Image (cartoon, rainbow, N blue to C red):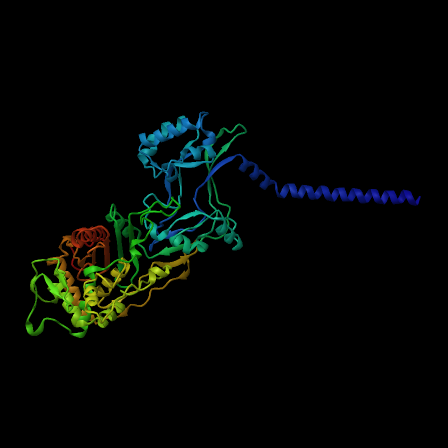
Length: 576
């Protein structure tokens, strides 16, 4: 009797356990049904990321993005192409690019089409399709499965604006991937390799991308619904980086520097904000390895060169501040075409016939070497060196951007007790190196009545809703020379463009002031500001292989100034 009762209890207990298990299985099945369905759907999707990298945007001062800009592209889904050899499709797709004059994607242009087809994953064949090209492609898209036109967001535009500053993203090395893992990053496949992409990599990493996908059936045939948009599934909140650059100014400056070898920098004279910075020639941000030859990856705007005659501005300011002149008792300096140093060495003027009698203002406009060599001897090396430091010509700074040790080190190196050293320094040839950014800063101080601003590139870090999380404030400009000295030099620089070596920079659309510089071995310069009477912008243009500071660099300055004047609707106005 006891045994029978025990069996009944055991049976009831087992039934209860089976019932609980069944209920739990139903709960699990119900709660994960959506996940299982999504997983099945994903297994039947061929997809490409709508946003190339899961990174925040790099924005200009007004919120326009330099990265992740939407553009129309032609996609290839290799698994959906009609059956044929890869060799056939390589020939066909290359012909399509050439015959329709389509802009090939970087990998395709680099001859990797065969590898892309063999990999079987969707890829971009052509970028930046115009509406006309899109219309012309419709018969092809209707005839051949596996080709689709859509809109996606590549990390970098085809114009590559500000590439040397922004840098690029590339595949992580084993060491880099290990570091990213330790930092808690799930996606370790890529990393910022240079520029802002590298310096702000941790901040820019963020949300996952939406996808552009094709649903296929069990025979790998596309379903009737065509391309689908699949929203991103959340992830780390995206942070965006806002720069001081002006997108439109940057585009103008890059167009002016196209086919040039050098750099251009545009600053706000009031606060030192970098509004445009160009290094030419540009480079393709999708080619992820630095060049082994040449200097295409070097940011020439932050690289050091002899400032040549632009440095004469420093001597003018020192002379005016200390009331030092070589025009004694009304007797003007007479340039005969050369000058002899105390050691007997003779230095020639670029005008071998000489400029004749001239005061300091005319000598600056004429860019007369003998005059400034003589003025330099009167000022002395110590005073010239002091004013070089005061005016930012001894060190490079850029707020929000981490300069390398070599990029920030002083290049002022001369012996102030040696007359020949002082002579070379006085005409900007030896003993001093400066970057286009530093030269633009010098001109900002002149335009800003002797107040030296601190250049700034990064303005703020923003959240995904545009709220400021961290700000890089502007530094207060410092009064480094007397205001009247700066105003006098400003007047001389206006005269230099109207009558002197800067005449090629003169414009009928907007008044420009500035100074030329032609180095013996290291390129040519034009540095100035505009509008001349109430300056808003300071500019430095350096052309590495130029022959004349006026015609080569001055012409670039004029083009940039005129296009900005048209954009801002201030042409033919003396006051803004």
